[in-house]
Image (cartoon, rainbow, N blue to C red; front, side, top):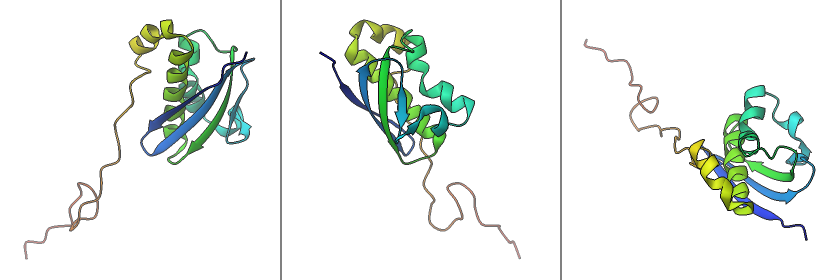
Length: 129
């Protein structure tokens, strides 16, 4: 029986929900091919890093629904979702993925704009006279 695992990963404001199934290495993101969706090499590498660390690049089919954020945030969210799915599929991979830092959610978010100033930290120009 083919076991389907569903996991979620988040990064900044991006959320990636995946369906992870043993297969031939076919990845689709929002109905498009993986290489077409993530058009930068850094995003391509970042998104499948857990598969390369676990040496499982051509062993799973992944169906991804990515919403919010930009391509970099979505790639990070996808990376976390894949790492979590690999842990569910094979708990022995947890140590390898954890050592690589792939199971940790990146908490960095954009700081909110404060009232009375033009940005989060920037101040309006001060005039002495």
